[in-house]
Length: 232
Image (cartoon, rainbow, N blue to C red):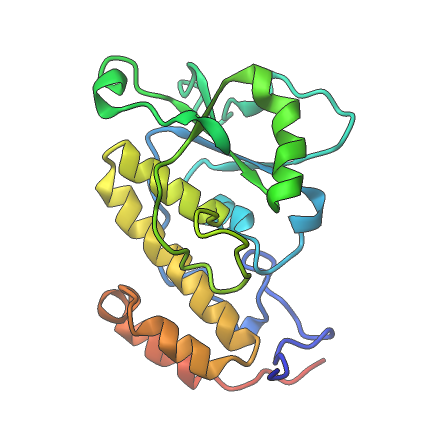
């Protein structure tokens, strides 16, 4: 197993949590959102550079992350964005055990204004679901194909990362512009994280089927040519 080039003492970016050498925060503009995007994050995900919950908070305008605390009662008002208070209405809670995501026909008159994503592993997500299941409508996305989240092994083909779940929401709502831009954020997050782990060959393999190569070729070249930053 190649040694990670992100050492324990390396200075990390406070936003993307990667070492400064691999920081990707300014590569792609934020994603405008017409809905309130909320993430309930398990505390064990909070400081992991691989977390896509923190990616959503950084990349999507107005997205909010709340860290789950067992025993702390959650209310509907906890998932109303202060930056977009008009994003009200029924809360859609994404979970593989939910009912099928509403069809475009049923959403035409009453589109969802708020979506809650559960950020954690399968066991953690089930626990978090019990804390919010009464606050909204629990729904699942259709099959999305193999996950592009190469940073962690998925136990089932149907399991996807939190960021990929949001991509599924954008697709289901027909917001192709938001889907395309956030996909770039997600793919760059995975690619840079592979580089930070010293997995250069895997990172090159990842790029072979990525929209990044045509979308931001200059930034990719710059990222690959960066030199290590001396530890302080």
